[in-house]
Amino acid sequence: MICGGSFYEPEDITPCPYCEIDAKKAQGELFEKLAAIEHERWADWQRYMHEQCFRAINGNLVIPANLVEQWERQIATPYAALSEKEKNSDRDQVRRYWDLVRQEQRR
Image (cartoon, rainbow, N blue to C red; front, side, top):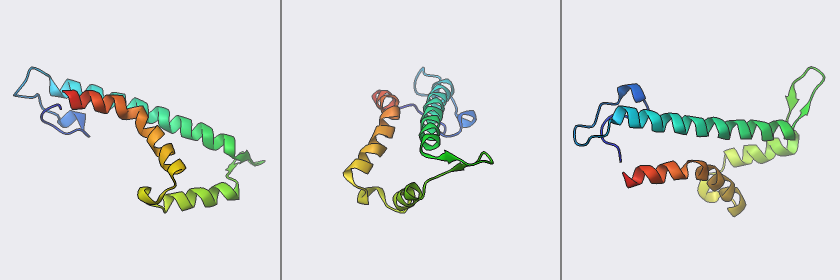
């Protein structure tokens, strides 16, 4: 684990006084790696969403009613109450970050 500072605001991170690691640089790099993964995750979701929708004459994307119902149900459902298939979908997203988390745990 990296010492000192905030994991969320790289500009507020101070160098670790207890080790040789420059915490600001290390956390800033981690922050950017996580941001890149998040962008990839978001782009994949948007690509999927666009594939599920149809484009109206005015260019708007229209989500089919069955998907609106499904996603609204999922939004309102706590993780613990999701089906195993739905939980696996969330777990697949966590796997995008998991290697970085494991690397940080080893520090």
